[in-house]
Image (tube, rainbow, N blue to C red; front, side):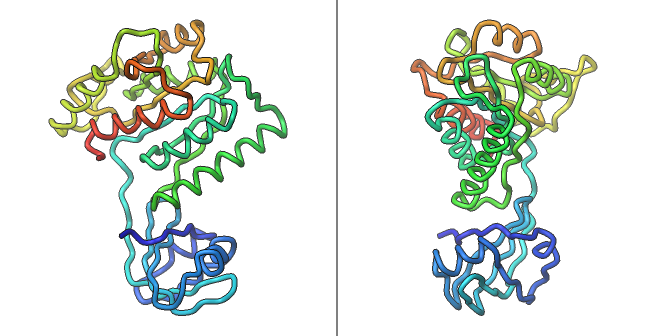
Length: 276
């Protein structure tokens, strides 16, 4: 069984640990470990810095709001060779937060909030700051629950125009950007076959002189999935994204909600590229 994971309040302090050292987990995480989870002397746990460092140790002292452990193992996890990004449209009913939570559990590396044309939720001013804070908290909690050493990076929220510009930059650099949409006849299985073939060849990502990745011959260094709000991606946005270099694929024969489309697509892609 995997060990419980806590996030270091100060990454620098954790990064300075050596085998045999004592490390004190305090702050909110220390309180949660000592008082809520009631970790006790002799029990093992992991403390992570959110950037791939995992320090494993046994509790040697317990206080009301902190734990002290002896460092028994230090693990530096390598970042994935293919980064997965979810561009999630703002949605009502907390479905956007459900999406990024599940995406974190399946291994997403970065998340971009998208103010789509059909998003009923609008992030402006103070509401935008509160929304970003809530999303960041969701990512941290989901990373802990899924025992991850990496916390997905939360990028700045973007409009459709800015997203189209970003798609152009990504595809020019050899990355793949996929829009999940029900209007297309091209199933996601087409892309999955290309990714499996590339993964079997185990070739590093390369870029042609045109700046585009070569489908079916190498794995891209980044794959992004764009998911619209409950009302879907509107035709103007879809045309804009396709013109910028995005690929549009159908995710099955049923229509998935904004909360599930991203995690499902990322799961299938993770399997195709050999993460799972």
